[in-house]
Amino acid sequence: MRFAAFLVLVGGLLLVACRDVPSPAPGVSTGDSPAAGDSSPASSPTPTPFPPEPVPARYQAAWNELDAALSEFEKASPASSAPAAGVGAPAASLIIADGNRGTALLAPATLDATRLYLDRLREFGITGIELQVSFPLLQPDFPNHDRYLAYYRGVMGFARERGIEVLVETGPIFTNSQFTDVAVDFGKMTPAQYFAGRKQQIVTIATELRPDYIAIGTEPNNETAFAGIRFTNAEYVAFVNATVAAVQMALGPASDQVKLGVGTGTWEFDLFRDMVEGTSVDFHDIHIYPLTGKGGNQLQVARSMARLAAGRGRAAIIGESWLYKATAAEVRSNPGAATAEIFRRDAFSFWRPLEVRLIRAVLSIGSEFRSPLVSMWGGRFLFYQTEWSEDVDRLGYAETMAEIGPATYQAWVAGTLSRLGEEVKAMIAQR
Image (cartoon, rainbow, N blue to C red; front, side, top):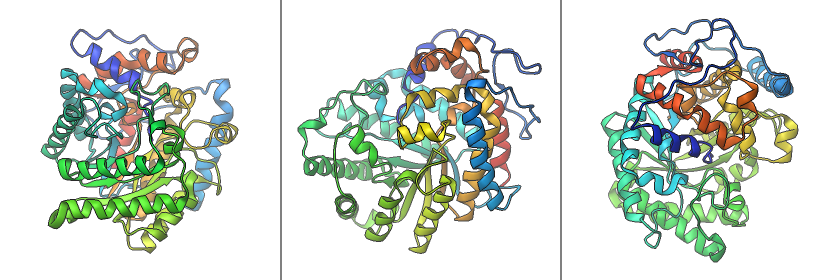
């Protein structure tokens, strides 16, 4: 969704980009762990058999539930030594270019940092990116809209130079939240005005940026949560159809160069089904975060969603996926995937065995349905995670991201991978 669970981190990366980067403090020792945290040379395509780290007692319940959900899926799905074999483009979210960063995107250092991150992703074996171009950044009446457009043109140029496919997602700025400092008064918009503006910006994205894929909607629940816009399933389907028609008219003969799609998270299955039945898009976008929820095992729900898309002859793209490190009770208390406390947990490397299994499962779904693109939201953790410690764990979300920021940037510059990254790199290389 992602929502900007990385905003503080990326701000920190840009601050340290032009000066010496301090060595990160060592985490709790686990014997053979590197002193600088969880980062190792990226040269070898074969991962070292890393031993698991101890699971802190406060996270044991979440670990057990996630392990059980993954095991349930693994038992029902045949194992593969090459889970990414049928995936068109293994992908990652381009966290540094997320629209929720607002004016930080306009800083001169941002383009250089974006180029560096794309280089590292390409070296890793990533051939696709998911990019959030948030509404209303490109609207004619939004401050600096022309500069935002220039930045995103630069990003598209970098991607094309590196042979990277681009999926643009188009949801609203997460205004009035801890995830962005961009202020947008969506309350001044009626639902009709809001969706007309969304349609207009998507036409701009199509005509000015020409990405490979545009997702018209991906987690519609966020349009209510952050923009306060309420709608029925039928109204959202109508918005999608109107936007498809507007983009096709604007592009004319070039309309086949930009694939249009729509989708939801696994927690919005009913709306997803209505989208499949009521639209004529090129693809459907699936987001996978919580492993438990309505409909049972959410990996199996994702398979059902991909099967629905395939039944209409449409591609199933997995636009975002990551191990959402929450218990079932935590998910029930806040459906979807928008809790900073949960995303704070991504910093710790002890989750690695479960993360590897989740990524393998998601790639296997993508391979089964010949997905043209399967994206990992937490791509930055392929470069650095820290060992768990009481000191870091008592920090809030923003402080945690700031704590690991310098070491993450150091890993980007040096071209080193976390242990998670080593394992995932080997996994996607087997294609």
